[in-house]
Amino acid sequence: MNALNRRIAFALVTTALASCAVSPSRVDPFEQWNRAMYSVHETVDGALIKPIAQAYVRDAPQLVQTGMSNFFGNIDDFFTGVNDALQGNGNRAGDAFGRVLLNSTFGLGGIFDLASMMGITKDKNDFGLTLGKWGAPDGAYLFVPLFGPTTVRDGTGAIIRIYVSPTGYIDSAALSDSIWGLNYLDTRAQALQAEGVLDTAALDKYRFLRNAYLRSRRYQLYDGKPPPEPEE
Image (cartoon, rainbow, N blue to C red):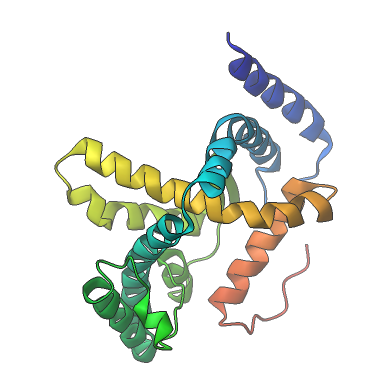
């Protein structure tokens, strides 16, 4: 067993033992398992993924980083438009599809975000929020190593997004996997800035991240005006 595997096994065992005293939460009934998965995530990410993301941010030209973020952001804009339309928000859908049309043509496939320069608002929407707008409950909170926090509903939305992603229609597995890898790298690199807040503000990083995620999603679901949260 190599050093990384030993660290993963140690994280699983110690977290499972430590979490035995944690009372189940209404929103997080699988907290013991989720904490174990969070420890696995921190071990693998800290040993492998995070150093790669840090090297990318440090060494890659800013123009390359911005262009890659804009490219994947352009794909996100398309799915934002789809979800805006599914939620019956025609104005937001029009803005999102307008961004895609402008950036995909004059922005050279989305590498340049001309839409933002012209004042066309960028929004974020996804299939998890659409399911929520249609009445689907959150379901249990889950933490998936290397992907992060989610819920049953949001995870289902993520699976839908993966299934309809344009990379799924690329015949070359090597090219498709490379695009997924670059997208993951871009996402992980963007998350580096937020980690300072997590490291300095939280005594219990797992709980801090869980609560921040659930409150953020609730805020998005209710368009910034969430009703009072039910008591635990």
